[in-house]
Image (cartoon, rainbow, N blue to C red):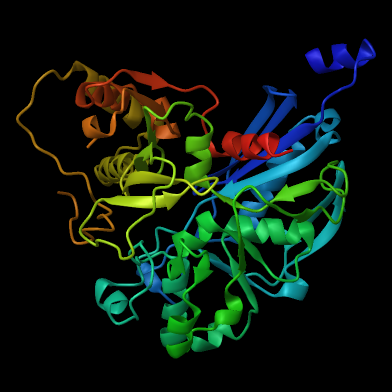
Length: 444
């Protein structure tokens, strides 16, 4: 490798930055090597988590994941990366699926063990992760909660909404824990042995009951409703350092700087957005179309529940205008799973990969059809009852495509190119793990 050649020639070898994305269905890690402003992706690794599990409290409306399985996938990812490069990691950027919440005991959140090339940690007294896909908070339940002082509407799957649900439906559950955060906040807290969890403005806004303008929780509103505010993490700006690793980790030296956990959506955009006139379209498990707002832009004081556009905190005080959909690659996966079940009931067993192949071939061969499909089977946050059923003026000149569903599906790419009246460019190394690494690289 070029790194080894540089070392052999006696030139100083630049440090590495590790980016980690704890996604909805998989974990990805990427190593970024750079000197000054040059950066090269050294290695990357991805592992499926297979973490979905049943919810005892919420039943079929619950969407939970086993944190132990997520951390196992993370450990497998890091174990697959080159030890020589991991030993040079000086900074770690971590991101993951937003909105969700996991609870833990501060003194017993994990245990460190010797394993393979170096120490690793495993979850100990940790709850399941209640994900952003969770639907236990019905519209009726959400309407019974106090109105947030925030520009973002409260929705099911948001961390604070989930805490309210436990408070009213299963209060004994909350008494077992004294800390909470997103899944990536949890990993940062374990790596740095934080006594009080830290959370970036990006993740705090995704939980609800957070005022992005003054960067504070709606503590007065929450206190009046009996909300356990001791569970709320301390909030800091995205890009800041949360702490240092308290132990060597998979060969990464003790004392490596760990950035505060970031939103996966913001990191995905950061990995590819270079021009103000670009719009980023990401289609993975869900889908988002975003543009960067002008410097100094501030979101409205109150949300518009009927609007499909939300303003997400980005970096350096900027915002992204985001049209976010709950429906993306998950719709294709659900459709394929349904077809597989039908064929099995008819006495046939067909691999899902074969179904994907035939669907794509059929779609590519189709030229015109009067069939109208509204594939919003997961609803939308601004219209949750809509089940299965804006760019010229902002100066957008190009669409940057990203996301696993878009990368793997030619039909989706053709539809994107048909719908948008702009050139469409598909990025390389465009993902949240890469974005998290780039954030730390640019802030070294």
